[in-house]
Length: 274
Image (cartoon, rainbow, N blue to C red; front, side, top):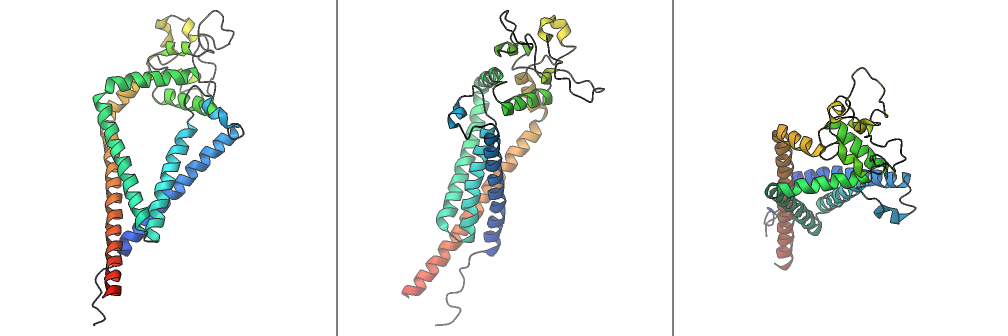
């Protein structure tokens, strides 16, 4: 029996360490996002009162860090350890999990296109729910302010949506100083001002509609978001296609490595029993 008789089946080191290196970055980034989420919750006292997680009427942005970070951590762990240890179970788990995410993204994209009017209504409902909870969570408040500043908008479909918030509504019984106003993020920017005037939105909605546009952005965030999508359609499509190709590439590499490992295992099995 010659020494080269069983030579031929090898695990590709290039694929193995490429998957390992690629996934260790995801693993570390996932841990960082989860860590940021836990730190943000500890700063708000959520960790000392877990029931407060469900108390908010709107979205807690920290959930985004926790969910995305958790998924990235699990995927990174499975791909990294699976490649390093040549563990076919973890590599198959990595491939299947990545395939499920790809399928969900594809399904979401198709459904969003088919039911775009329903998505628009749900987005309106989502924004209004978060407007109600604007003062309940500092992270949510910062997210809404960033959105309104970035898209130069106010409310879901207009400034009057802020009537939904107990601090900004125009009812006679509202004792708040912010009554009939809007957050500062609705205000039009003055290039000459270096310091943000956080009181610029006070009493704005008590003025006639024709005067409001001189002080605040009167367009809603839903129409502005639609306009942004239309203006950046190529960029958005390119990002989605790039992410999809990376996922397909990762699945193919993992399956290729699994095939190599199984071929080597089959070769050693046949050698033992021959």
